[in-house]
Amino acid sequence: MGRSPCCEKLGLKKGPWTPEEDQKLLAYIEEHGHGSWRSLPEKAGLHRCGKSCRLRWTNYLRPDIKRGKFNLQEEQTIIQLHALLGNRWSAIATHLPKRTDNEIKNYWNTHLKKRLVKMGIDPVTHKPKNETPLSSLGVSKNAATLSHMAQWESARLEAEARLARESKLLHYQSKPSSHHHHHQHGFTHKTLLTNWTSKTNEDQQQQQQLESPTSTVSFSEMKESSGISTKIAFVGSSTGLTLIKEPENDWINSTIHEFETTQMAEGIEEGFTDLLLGGDSLGRSFSADKNETAVESSGGGDCNYYEDNKNYLDSIFSFVDPSPSDSPPMF
DNA sequence: AAGAGTGCCAACCGCCTCCCT
DNA sequence: GAGGGAGGCGGTTGGCACTCT
Image 1 (cartoon, rainbow, N blue to C red):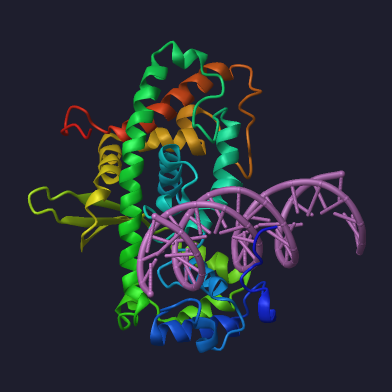
Image 2: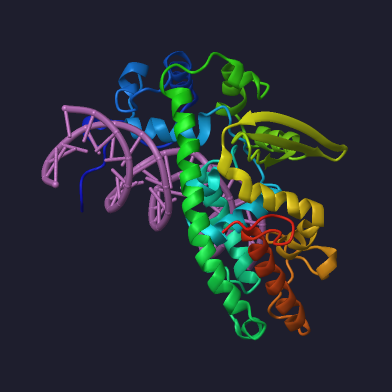
């Protein structure tokens, strides 16, 4: 059965974390940074293995985590990146900076995967299960090209994920950089503790309601000459868009952000969102949890089904090669 | 009201990769 | 180059909450 689990020895604690444990872990990292995870539990006075501490920190306690419902843009990004990268959740997570790979993975498995299946799309290959009508339009040829480009893009994203990881590591590995990081999100560790570790479901919902109207979409403008990219975050709300600029060294982001910019400009987003989430333009609902309409069983659904899948693939294609006429070739 | 079924997600497990010696 | 330790990743599961019958 392979090697024994790391925390089997010495009767280390497993299972759900208590608020007290969370507090100890947070206080320690706040003070010292995490350093070596293996030695951390003892130093922090925790009867957990280092691995468990790391997981708790990265998936729950880290101050830069956005929790709650995924917005449309996030769902869209996950689906598109999954089409390119497959189940490489950590790579996908680097493009949803406030989401953890675990959360994305869970959301995919519980929501998005099912939704694609309902649409007649294979969630593994992101191709329609019945490919015949599309093949006749030359989509198969495109798919071959896509596959090739996806390999390239995949490698790029992997490098990017590594860079992101390294920068995060540097940030916390020694001593965390004072408090500015936390204040940036409007709360300190103390409030974090009160708000999160002893939070009831009701509280979580309230928090979600607070967070959900504010969706953040990031764009990077490539500064080809200088090699420095500028990150622009559009903080959207019902009242409009706020533009936030912050410097960033993450040069590889351009592809995905280019795509997002193109989508915003061309209004593709609406079609894609409709396709996945159910909108008026397609005249039916994909709202997976409630008010579902069976797609495959509808009598006149074949035409919509075909159009949906075509739009879906178009969207993925445009993701890889967003605007052939306006921008220089990427490959 | 209560038992069964289902959904969701935090946490675990084991494998893999990287890095140091 | 080999070996071992540590961290990271993706698949899976346990248990709670909610819904259905």
